[in-house]
Length: 93
Image 1 (cartoon, rainbow, N blue to C red):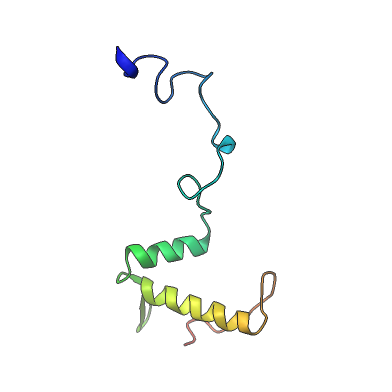
Image 2: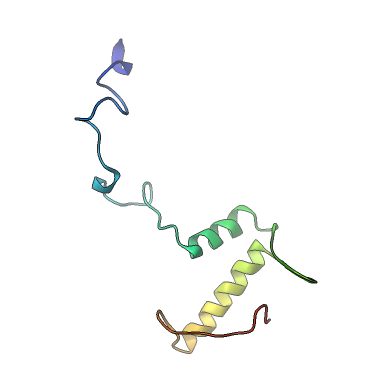
């Protein structure tokens, strides 16, 4: 049977199975799936695809990502951080 037979490879028995939580976290097996991660991923994977369509206003994922980064930088310069409450007009340029 070779190395492909019973007792070898993935799912070969309860004694060899490991819980995913037992693995050390690294870039190969763990990425925090935050809204920021999805935004960055969309900007990288589909930069020219529409992300916002609101009447005559249209933004691509790349533009949305840049705008969000600019807003985050502006807020950070004003010492706005985690836990702060922020209010702004939607789609204000």
